[in-house]
Image 1 (tube, rainbow, N blue to C red):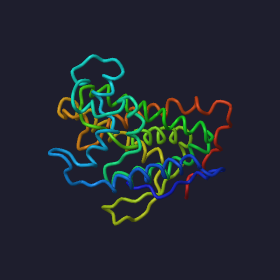
Image 2: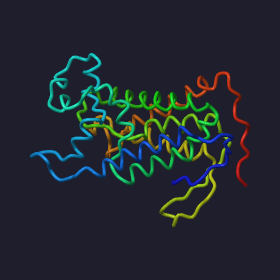
Image 3: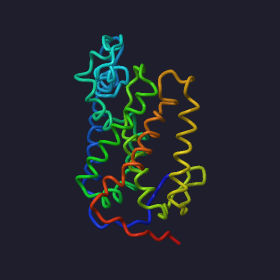
Length: 250
């Protein structure tokens, strides 16, 4: 399902959410400027960029104190400081569909969460949840040497917060197989179905997918981000009024 718009109305302009989206696109356009032709016998400029700034679980965990051979591998030695990639990887995407899908979901759901939390708290929340999502992925696949990239773990946390804050909201969505005809659907149904798919896909890949991202998707980053976002949203609302109840679209 592709979300088009939702029923909650924000009271403030989502400066942070817009800035996050802008930074993601700026980084993506920089990626497009890199050549995909081989610059060495094995990797291209784009590959080098992703290996440099993507979050490689084995490298990151080793840099944080885990003693393993991976810390001495050529892959890990290419990173300035592997732990920093927990954040930098959140702003790197692997193609137009990857970034377009992520930014659409962030655009639909992030503005209302920012409105509820406030700008500074939302910025901290987004980065924190993104880090939790990365650690969830790394805990399941600690020896993975494939770089994990994308904002989807943090966005999953935003969706988790959204469903707690706006359980009665309605999302107008479309399904490509149904000729993109828009239809209203309760937010908890759409997001709940999405989360069930992540759970099923993630756990079914354990023991089968050696690289940690079934079909190129780090499902456990989504699972960890979503749960963390739903669990921590009320902490970030302390001292702030809760959003007014949302009337479903009719």
